[in-house]
Picture 1 (cartoon, helix red, strand yellow):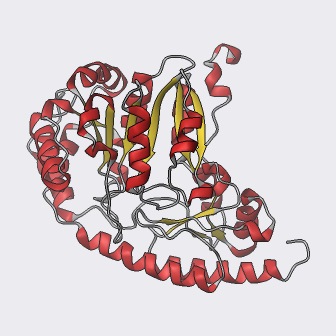
Picture 2 (picture 1 turned 45 degrees about the horizontal axis):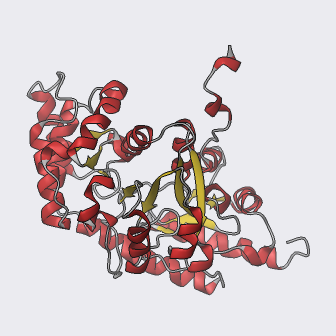
Length: 384
């Protein structure tokens, strides 16, 4: 019966991030600089809130889109913190940003519809588009320091274009889209029926750059689908909590997918999420800023070129001078130096690697020491 499965399952690829992380886990004394997972434990007040919710018997079915108190707090948080005005009824509380993206893409795509994906791009987008029977259209940004330019964007648009995904700060590059990039998207979609999916999960980690989300273009409100997560800002990756915001006429259709896919996220976790939104977690952002400065200094000392990241917790240096495909580079780095990073090919940008500095400082220092020694070895080999 295998041949009777959804054909999209046979072109879907497993995440290279997970593959290299799993390989690293099986390699003794391997330093993992792969996963974008905060090394911080979820703050104590959040953990206490879920315990209190369980003790209070909050173990029953709740509203599909989330309890009113959480949706109200999300709406007020987004307005107070970021100036984005959505009503509580415009919010769907999702199982992380992953489900929010799945709901958004499955909700807007008909078979054959196209989605523009500025690349480098997080591996998830292409696979979700594929599973929704859409077609991913890559927009290469490497020649423009990972920014979006009008001519390149317009060249990707066809009568089948249904959406564009904007991820800023970006995974894997850490780049924050500048105003020129966002304006280019605005001009491209304002007279067309194209959705803009704003994956803003890293906006809590910006390092000096002026940050703007495309969600600020409120005259395009009916075209906007805004995705956010508790995973990164509040170190809650294992909780699988996020949210999706959309104009109500769109949201009331999208929430059918959410309802039938997961019913709702867990009731006690929703109580904890309310507590999370009231916490000051700037200390984590400050620690990532320090790690960023350290990583940039170390990579500069190794002679690796890169576009400095203005957000998230990744760097995306070029390895082109070594003449190795990124997958081969990463495989050798893992087997020879016991350091795991992610090949740029996974993000549609071979010739680069992604290094995560979401790990602890000791692992980061050891990993970079080993990376430097490995590069030294490569440069001394005629087969490099």
